[in-house]
Image 1 (spheres, rainbow, N blue to C red):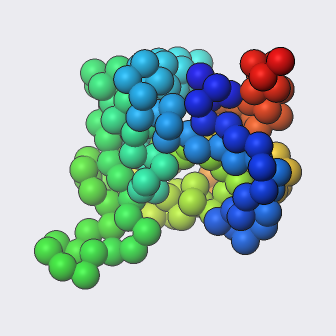
Image 2 (image 1 turned 90 degrees about the vertical axis):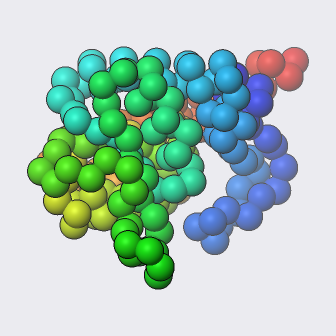
Length: 178
């Protein structure tokens, strides 16, 4: 589904400032009814396989939003939270929205990991709030931007994993195009 719906070849400007001959918009898949079901299942299965005993799942808005909801609904037990890029300037001024029990064990998620900065921001905000980060994961990792070492360092001692790599998605996209 990612290869069919979310992957595009062309010339693209990335949020990191670089350029790429492909673009992956995971939200097209994660916001699809069947895609959301599959994402919820695969993330939950991976959390269980890793042995991450978590109370909640969350990540930086907006890429993480549909993943958080899909996993929370699929699990029936994991709560969800979202991390704002900055604290609100009105209302309660919170950066963490949703589940907010300090000391809870959480998994940080993201849709695409390029430089890892979104995932790192979410990890740092979760820890600053008082969560214990037990794992971090993304749906698709772009290996060409070397995001893994940055995220792995920020997530430590927790592990960082990706469900798919951009190379795998590209290969499937090209196979579907022939």
